[in-house]
Length: 281
Figure 1 (tube, helix red, strand yellow):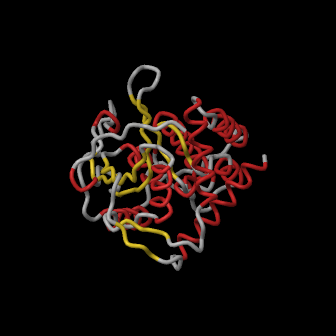
Figure 2 (tube, rainbow, N blue to C red):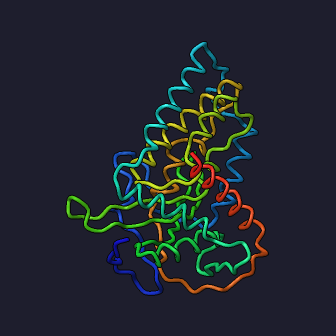
Figure 3 (cartoon, helix red, strand yellow):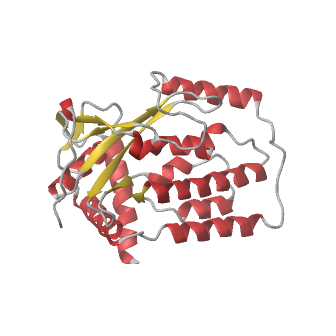
């Protein structure tokens, strides 16, 4: 494993990731502002949407429905392939480190990040120990038009000195499929969902391709059930989770916590099950 030179981090171990990584181009939507009530914003948006409904919610179905879902699953299979050797190696390292995390050991949780997963933080520490420039990233964006505000936490790894002499940013999301669970999903949608990687490791460019596919699949599924397509299922909202400006936490004050965090234990068990299945293939 090669050692990677860490990027400069500002005081307190935080760095606001700049527009060179996360600025939305040509979309006409600015996610750079901060929201102080993102959970309330989303709850209010959901309530209003369910009460008022949305235009364009007519029933949609045709003989091409299943073939359309099949095409989406095929596209996911293509995009799931590692784009380079670094991504392939990083994916294997992440899976191995997840298997190494013990349920009975103490799991440290950063006190500087609200609602962050203790598993994410443990994984960041393990990646650092393996020589990677890894950090916990916390993105946040405000309401814009019909899009609700929100926040999200994930891991990024910066690989320095790539083939072009610059740096490449890789995203790690340890509970990737959970972002795409929808109500009353048709069977074909669940097939597409299960074709996604349970743990995403890859570039932002490839991530956005998968998000576009899942937004299309969600629209197909909802329309088949004569259900409206809500704005929080759109590509723009999904994209905001990983592409909004974020704070990058490399060194954090942490408080040791026992393994009594049942939500962490449950997630860890699911992750190990997914990884074990992948290794058996």
